Image 1 (cartoon, one colour):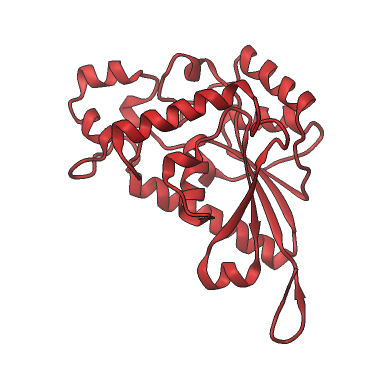
Image 2: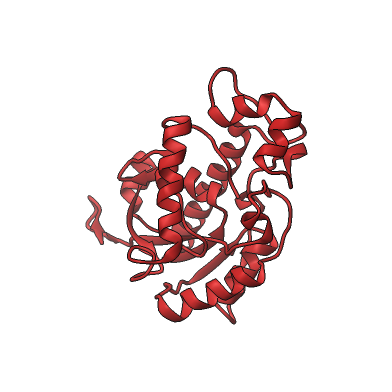
Length: 247
């Protein structure tokens, strides 16, 4: 709790960002930004295991990307809860690159390497969404969510969304400050943020204070090792603050 100059105690607010479970496209290494794939059987089973072994936070508000892999994840992790669908939390639209692997895209589009490296002029996937458009959409949606929570006094929310969305939000607003790829999350995992109204209204930043699910993703979850490897590979290949594959 924090005290204003008028002596009124203000609430703090929490937002838990959770990445969806595994899909067949993820397993095959395909770009499936706006492709509306369901969870795979493997993905659903892994989420059930996480839910039984870990601790997912409850909330007053549940929010989801409209895509099946997110709405299904929310239903598995929070059975009986109804989600508010926010289109702005959809993954990036990869246009003509949707459904293809990196090797397939590189074989037919010489601009893919430039897009992946982030070197030189920005590249937009043909028929898709630019990095700037994606970041603006996600950040606008997040700011509207926070403003709505502050106005209504809704103190907690769970948001089930995509890896690229989580990385965009946390690299823009999260404290401590970290690079885009540092916020990668394993399937079914994510981060908890604490919004302090005064700090948010003054600087539009929020404390990232924990991982979700508590007691599991931070210690020993098999997906965590893969994420750590991916973070290092991204940093080595693209350098800091470069845009890479999202799903």
